[in-house]
Length: 297
Image (spheres, one colour):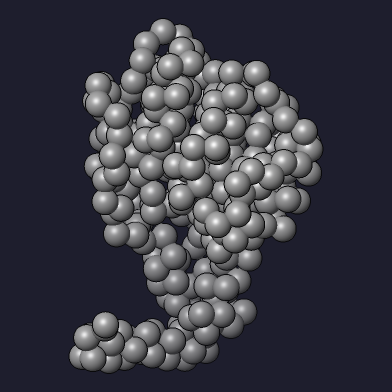
């Protein structure tokens, strides 16, 4: 049960925030836009660590002046990188580590800037998908060419950014519960804060300045079109509340990738489901590319 006093404080703060943005639209739209940008990119509370198999080698790399921490299992030159999304951490992929190493791969996971055990990046407690992409690229530079990158949620777009703008190269891609685009999320954010078109223009400019590219470019379909085609598998849950199913279907169709659909796993449990893990490892190994549409329990 929520504490009555705490609930009152939260309602007051939320009401005060909406009031500021309502009047800021007319009085200080540029300031309101920058503050909205700062709210949007504020790093979420760090997810608690999740169990991973023993025997991993801890490592650090430096990315944009920040210390990025991770772990690697296995050896050799067949490497699979595991890229988490917004609010996540590398240990979310713990269920994939042993199946990948048994199949002969080195599994490499890490925490993105201001997430997990990693330091904040150049934006401090504000971070973004471009910082994620640069961290992935710097981890790649530590371990070398990839057989596959397995990405979750926003990690999808960050992976494409690393492929397009960094040194990352890979034979295969796997996207689990992929975030397809950002504009609709910004629209919902605008509605929640209650600001109008003047503040929105200032917000869009502030976002572009912070991440270094227009927000319309933060779209997996656009980034995929700029990337060399390679075998790709997409997996998602029909009930995922964070990545709309129809968007994922459109994304998979736009890149010509098979789509694997689950029921009842949502946005995060899908990463630890045994059937999902098996399907991913089979695809990474090239033993089962899959048809256009599959459903697994």
